Amino acid sequence: MRYTRTSVLQVSDRCPHCGKRTLVEDVNTGEFSCNNCGYVITEKSVDQGPEWRNFGDEKGADRARGGAPISITYRDMGLSTMIGGSNRDASGRAFASPMRSTIDRLRKWDNRSPAFGNQEKNLSIALRELEKMADKLGVSQAVRERAAYIYRKALERGLLRGRSIIGISAASLYAAMRDTETPRTLKDIAEANNLDRKAVARDYRILLREMDLTMPVADAARNVNRIASRVGLSERVARKAIEIVRITEEKEISAGKSPMGLAAASLYLAGVMEGEVKTQKDIAEAAGVTEVTVRNRYKGLRADLGTQLGLSEAEAHVAVQ
Image (spheres, rainbow, N blue to C red):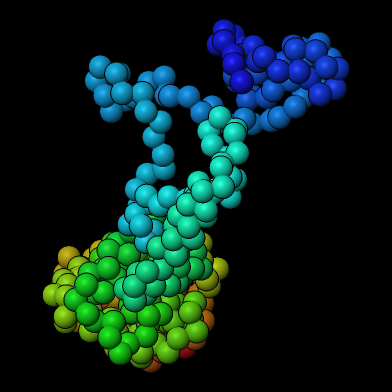
């Protein structure tokens, strides 16, 4: 198929509707249509030519077409090849019989090669499971990349021997969330994959110990909005709760306390102060902690920050109820 590029592409081919050689391609919409009768032959055609500009080359000499970006979340980093099922060459001519058998053999090995070897099979299964987990939990691409990196390193060190692929995948995803400070809990990951929370925690501790991973301290303020949306508290209460969490960090009151429990207690205290009181049971269920934890953390906040926050005796009495 020959064409010349102007404002449209003149194509030397016949229209299947009227039979005239007046086919043109609109470079803006990618449509092949007949200039005589208006019949649209194809839509969204792909330009197989070189790129007009290459921003990676200062002189613009390299006009090679670039593909999708490389990603560690794919088993082959996104650099896989695929031999099509058509037994024709680039010019449309059919292969001869010896060449056809050679192409069939190459196609067969091309299909088999992605799953060649135990490690490759393991990695293919694990990365698919990681993608499913990430979709269910709604995490960013950065978290997925980090989780895939941790799993690959665990596989290289032989930590998968005798352990569940899904379990280590879940532990890798949780480690990536902790590393990127994404507010998700072990319970969330376990529920998303129908796994036992204790089993995921055990695999996570194995990754920390064997791979010498150092995780940042979890920020309680990152969990406030999540809990507030679950129990139906307003943005004003959430901002007040975050302010309370920051004050506890400044006074070093939060040291040694569970971030989720501290966030739940701060949100409960903020709700009391702003007149949007929710029960300790509701907030505890939304945070995934016990009522006793919320109550104890609240009593500590009231004792340490009651004067500074201006919490009256009446408000304290309501909160205890």
